[in-house]
Structure formats: C-alpha cells, structure tokens
Length: 222
Image: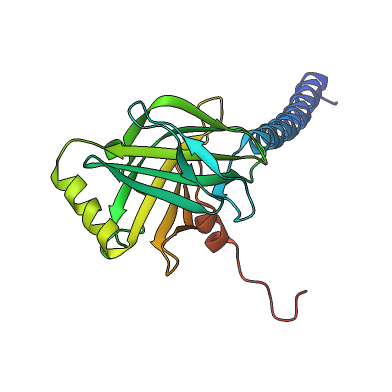
C-alpha cells in the first residue's frame, strides 16, 4: 500500500527545491543585470585626461599672486617669478564624464620615479575647484613659493629641461579616482611640450591587470 504521507512530503520537498533553484537563478540574473547597469552608469561618468592638442586654444591661468600665465594647447607653462615657481599644464578630457581635479605632484626628471601607483597622500591638493567637461580642454596648476628641498629639486629639473607631473582627479560624484602621469619636456624651440604617459585607476581594478587575466586565444581562433 502506498505511503501517501511520504509521497506527499517528497513531492513538497521536490517542489520547494525546484522553486529555490528558480529563485536562485532569478536572483543571479537580477544581480548580473544590476551590475551591468552600474558599470554602464559609471562608464558614463568616467573622465580621462590626456594632453590637449597643439591646435587647441591658449589658456590664460591665474594664481592668487600672478595673473595671466599663458599655456598653449599641448604644452605646459613653466614660469619663475620673483623666485616663485609656477607650473600649468593644458589638458583635454577625452572621457564621458566631468573631471573634477583634486591635486597632484611634480618630479624632477624621470629616473628613479616608480611605475607603481603613486602615493596620493603626499600630493599637493588644489585650493580651488577645477572642472573639465567631457570633450573640452582645461588645466591643472601648482605653485612652489616657499624655499624647500622639494622646490630646489624641481628647479633643478627645470634647469635640465624635463619634469614629470602626476594629476589626481575623479568624477563629480567623488569616485573613480584616477592618477594620470605626464612628461613635460623643453624642446629646442624653448617651449615645454606635454605628453601623457600612464593612467592609474584607484577605485577599481587596473585595466592592465584585467588584460593580463584574459586567457590567450587558442591557435587559429579569430
């Protein structure tokens, strides 16, 4: 004689298991869709700063004690006024979001400068808000007024004709912080030319690390 109580229990357990599996798949699918939507939103807010083009307009940048320092497109302005050092770099935002600039650092030359993520804790932060809209040009600026070993080192870099600049920025929500590094070299025409060298992502996985994680394609795969 069939044990209908046992059969009923097994049927109920099977139905519960099937429902749990369906719910698990639905939750995974919903989480995946939410993650895709989040990534799309972040991509729409993400700025990326490179050197501006030589055909871009000349900007005139003010400091609180010096006004009208001219920086042409694709270049930097390096000025020494009354013993104070002023540096401005012309940048273009090729990303899709507004770039909010936070601060940065300057190094004399390139020898001995690490290729690891720069220690942003030692950056000099901006004393005013600077924004660069998507597809537009803007600038980053820094001044060294007080005498210090750092200033003397940078002045030596100015004398030798080569500096490196790290700029810290992010999106207008305060996230997606990025450090972009630029070489600033004085050419034979006496102008300081600017070249983007590297970009580090501080709030998400490094693109270079993700690229290394992709398995190689099989032989003959298109």
